[in-house]
Image (cartoon, rainbow, N blue to C red):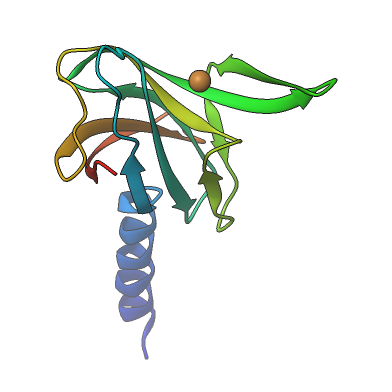
Length: 141
Ligand SMILES: [Cu+2]
């Protein structure tokens, strides 16, 4: 292989690396059905990012606001805390599940009825500060 070929291949590989966004896989996403009159809901899922990234923002057209929360036991009392962002280590799944991390939906515009669906827009930011938004449809359970 001559050096021109090598240069072409090297620049192609570089272009691929630059185009590669942190690929975040979203699985097991679901949202809990609300009781009548309840205006707050919670959504759960597993996030797996190929490269280090952060979940920085969540939006829904069906909720006034969506916050990222953590939950932990403090002297036998469950405590929730709002997080500015949720860190996703490279290749390590982060589970949002009852009793732990969750997305809290405020000012729900409609009741979340079991069997229905809810759409969320998740925004991720990678190490370089590039953002990427992903739409997720969650079954209501
Ligand atoms: Cu919460």
